[in-house]
Length: 76
Image (cartoon, rainbow, N blue to C red; front, side, top):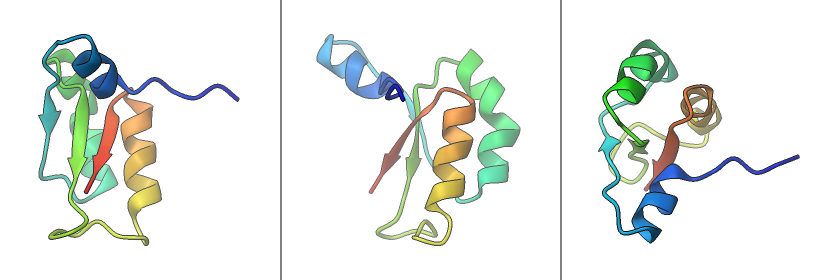
């Protein structure tokens, strides 16, 4: 199984800007705007676990939703 590319990390290592969207606590939100995010040049999704609603019960669904659109999930 091949590991998926981390677009955010690759861009930062190349000295480029990486764009991340935040405020998504539900996989359905990511799925609903995933195509628009990709077309707008968004590279990843910020998943807030320290002060937000992301936790062990939903992290799998959130990261899978990011993967479906080729977005890097960035978790705090």
